[in-house]
Image (cartoon, rainbow over all chains, first blue to last red; front, side, top):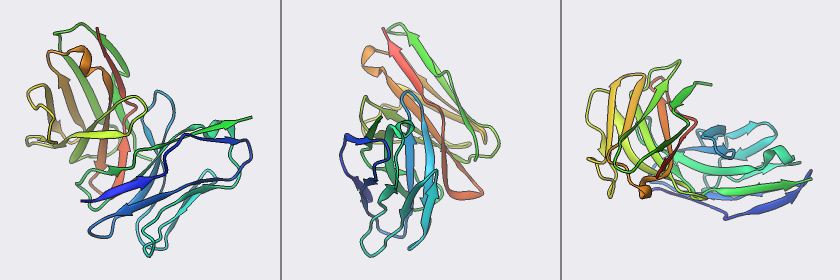
Length: 112
Length: 116
C-alpha cells in the first residue's frame, strides 16, 4: 500500500542552523505531497505542498521539491528559528476523497 | 486558506459517559471528512472516513459502535465517543477536503479528551 517514511527525530538545532528533514514515499499512482506542521497542543497546519513532479512547494522559508525519480519530498530551511520548534509530518494523497497517508512525524527543537 | 473548526478543544468526562466532538468547515463545502486519533508523540491514526449523507467507513480495529460518526451536512461532521473509558483518552483531530480543491485537506484544532 501507499506509505510515507520520514526521518525519525527528535532533531535539535541551534538557531540559524540549516534544516533538512528527509521524506520518501511509496505510491501506486502519482500522489500529491504535503508537509504539515503541528505546534504543541494544536491541530495540523499545511506548511507547503506539491502536486506534480519537479514542483517546489515553499512557505515561511521552508521548501520541498517533488522528486519523482527518487520518490522524495525532503523539507529544507536555510535558517531555523526557535519558533519553528514543532512536529513536522510528511503526507501524500492520491485523490480527492481518500485520506492523507502520514509519516510518523519528526519533532524539531530549535534552541537559542 | 480554508478553515475547519473543531469543538471542544478540551473535554474531561467521567467513565461511562458519552462525548460529542464537532467538526465544521466554515468557508467551504466538505463532502468528505476524516477523523484521526493521535497518541502522545505519535503520528495520526485514521479512524474513519465520513461522507456526507452516508455511513462512515471505519478503519480496521476501530469500533463503530463506540465511535459514532455522523455527517449530516456538507459543513458538519460529529464524532461521539460512547461509554468512554480512560483508554479512550487521546487527541482527536478532524480533517475536511474541499470538494473544489481535491488535493487540499484542512485540519481542525484537535480535541484533547480525558476520561477520568
